[in-house]
Amino acid sequence: MQHIDWNNLGLKGGSKQKSFEDICMFLCCRKLKISKINSYQNQPGIETEPFEVNGKKIWVSGKVF
Image (cartoon, rainbow, N blue to C red; front, side, top):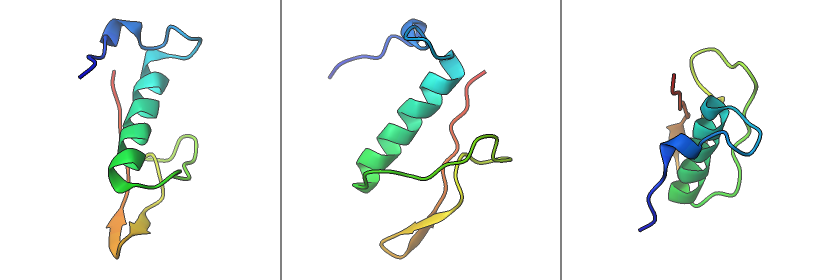
């Protein structure tokens, strides 16, 4: 398994926080076997509006400070 070097987050022009949120969204999509989650900038408390997959309500939040 490839290991993530947390010091490299944000090196491609984004912030470390945004890069971490992107990784969380990618892993969530991969786990749920979906291609995309609609999200809104500055959503209070969570990253996405709740959505449904296979009859289960899901929402995503990934933060690092």
